[in-house]
Image (cartoon, rainbow, N blue to C red):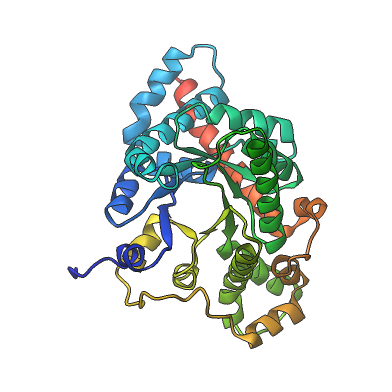
Length: 357
């Protein structure tokens, strides 16, 4: 292997763009921190995947929890383990958090997917997570209920991470909710200086969804267009965020190709990157420079707009209302995937609780 500077580390040295480890795996987080990462994030699918791949590291603790919590359900034990995994990752990131006064070094823990329609339960779980450690960041879905919860959680001093988010209208709604929460705190003389709200745009899932629509409706466009759909959404959201002066930072997620990294370099954004893509990017020959200000080709945008109403919903700032978020295709598909990931996680825990002799 070459001894050249890893590309992600070079990016953090030459640009303002930051990156996170898209996992709570301690092995993967260690790799990422050595190469310039400043945060980490989790979700039900990630936690399930970490348990499946590194079960030897957690098996003893799961058995202990089963013994320590004799009346607990699988859900109780799963959430206790989830919280402990987040706390362990948070400890590794704590020096960055302290040094930056809260602007770096956070780990995101995600609320229960089942609460996506219930704003009060989202808020209650968020406020509980906030007590786990200082550098916790709380993920909630960008549904109608989530928008309400973002404002309230921000008002209570929580640094949120908006997830299940794919579109410019969602990102704007998140940023506006956060601004309302911040202004309410500030009006009461409460400190906001160490808060760090972010809004995820799951760029690769935009591409995935349009491909699914094309297959279903037998649409044919230049294949390159699909790889640029999520990039276009992210760049448009970034432009609007800068114009509006929002205090929420954009976070790119759901990687499918190097555009989902390289095209955002130079932007004041964070990138939450899965381990396998970190390794690929670090070993690539992509030039490190500012790509964020380079526009997506007009012909790609024209074809996407002409053939996909769902792209218009994602790209245009008024493409959807908050009431429409809950029925947008990628939102539904991702909620289903997160729900299945949680069900699979529960099944792993259940096998330690129900001993079949």
